[in-house]
Image 1 (cartoon, one colour):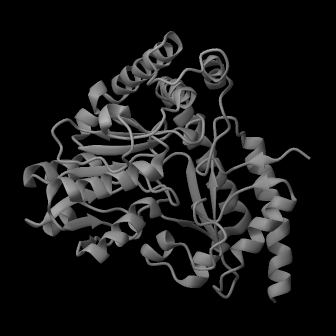
Image 2 (tube, one colour):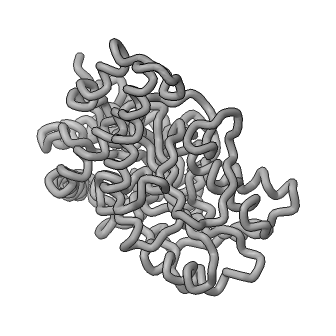
Length: 386
C-alpha cells in the first residue's frame, strides 16, 4: 500500500532536480574542498558558487553564509556564539521555540546566563512591543522563530528586528519552516542571524546554513579546522552544499505557486473537517493568517475530554496516512507538546492533537481520503471511550 504523506514539516523527499545537481559531487567530483589538487579545487569552486547563490536568494553577502549540518547546529552555534561574542549574560526567547534554541539556552543557565521567556498569545505570536519591553543592557541576543514548526504561527520578524536594532541587540530567527513557504529577505527584515535546513525544502538531510550579518558580535562555536573561514570546522559536505543551493533556488523560484497550493489544501482540509466533525474539531494556533503548509488540529469528545492523539496517529498510519503529533525531534515523548502548552491549551487538548503538514505533491483527493479515514477512526475511538 502506498503511503499518503502529510508530514512535510518533519522532512521532505529529495527533489530529483536536486539529486541531479548533487550526483557529480557524489561520484566523479569527490575531492576534499581543502585539498590543493584539481579535484579539491573543483569542490572548492562548487562550494563558493553555492555560497554566492544562497546569498543572492537571501539578499545577503556571500561572506555572511556559513554552512552547517542543519538547523539544530545553526541554532546552537548562534546562541552560544552570541553569548561569547557580546560578553553579555541575557537571552530573550519564547517557551514555544524549537528545542534547538531552547536547550542550548537552558544549558547556558549553568554558566550564569539569564533566560527571559516572552509569553506568546493564543495563536503563538510574540509582538515587537514585548521584545522592546524585555530588552535590557545585559541582553546578548533575541532569538524568535519566524514560523512555528508545530502550529504555523508567523512572528512579525521585521518589526522585532527593528526594535532590536534600535537597542543595539543582535536578533536571530530560526527560518527553517519559512524558507520556501513565505518570502525571506535579510536586508528587508533587518535580522542579524538566521538558520536554514535543506531537508525541509526538498533538499538533502545533514546540511544547513547559518547566516550571520557582517559585523555582528559572534564567535565560532564548532572548532577543529580552517573550513568556512575558520567559522565552522569540519570537512565540507560538498554534495550537500550543492544540493542545498539547488533546493533553495527551486524553493524561491517556485514559492508563489507552491504556497498557493499549500494554502488551498489547508483551507480545503479545514472546510472538510468542519463539515465532518463540527464542534469536535479545533484548530490549534492560527486558523487564518498562519504559514500555508501547517495545520495543527485537536479532536475532543462531546464532553470536551481529549482523545488519544498517539492512538489516532497510529491508526492513521495503519491506513497508510502519515501525520505527526508535533515536532519530529520530540515524537515519542510522553509529555504534552511544549508549543501547545505554551499557547495555553490544557493537557487533554494537547494530547488529542495532530499536525498535518502539506507538500507540493499532495492533492485535495488525498485530503478527502484523510478526512474520511479520520471519521471512521474517531467513531471507533469515541465508542471505546464511551
